[in-house]
Image (cartoon, rainbow, N blue to C red; front, side, top):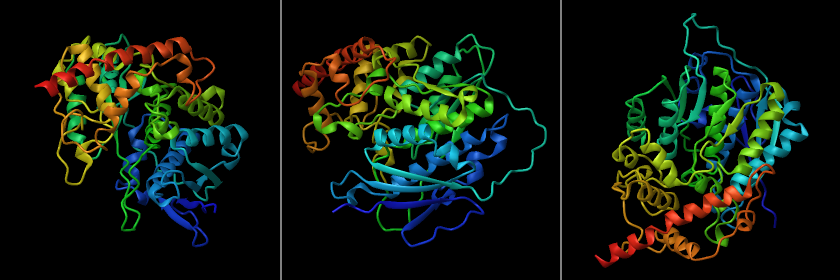
Length: 437
């Protein structure tokens, strides 16, 4: 029996209410933060084009739908059918063949779900009165900044670049980790720099949906939300390139086991994801106004990214104070305050990268993946990684799970994974030494 789709209706101010009981109303009220704190025109020095505003609205709606529709309530406890209605000023632009095909492919790639998004005409667009003429600095470069190792390394590198314009870092606050993000940002600002740095902090924390159940624990659309926020900021600064720094190992993120294929492995900065995102932006904005999203670290391993960070004079302690975890313990309601769990796959890649760059890793992890007494669930990534490292890996294996854009150099992409596997191999004797002790 085919499951009925979950239907959600994003409602703007002055917008009509959904008709019928099948629709669940969502909107700005679905977030803990006030709307103007996120999209206020005083945050940007120039106007934001309509398409960029709408892309951010669509990404927010998709993110809330992703959090409100729980995978555990589906037949296979993963795949969902989601119907979403979002108001836009020009529905025809969003209903074009190019926009529809790339948006659908993008969401399918990220989440593994079946999405049907309807675009209705926005009944009223609120335009705030102009603010007093207070000049705001205009950035020449925009990058996402998470407080992770990769974004810290890129920010530190670009802070020392020969560019007269400021570097704008767009940072989405992480629940329970804001102090850490501030420390990482302060470490970059304290470097000897050649240009100024601007920080644009954003918050997108979902409210509960009114039921007694928790929100969906997976967040496969978070990366799209962050990218859309950075794209919107870039248009307000007149910048045509957005950098999303992610080492090539985790950007490609080949599945460790066949059971982790598709959306079961995160693909937020995969080359195929960026291909569809850029094609969507092009379809919405037109060739003359497009913003290009690129991953500047796509050809580097985690260890190479760490070495690039140390080359900027960042101390090892600053690198170890960053966030890499896929499931940070600090997000748990009563969990420990460690930023990194130490056992998830991103933490394992982090461990190997710091070992490669610094010779050791003094990060305060919650636990060690090879510790005795851990539950099978907590050692799942470590066991899968060990099996993957002794399994032959070829360039063709990069294409078995997800395609790559036509312009991708397959040999160079494979080399990143091959070098990354070499770094990860360093964890095996570390585990043996720990167990022997």
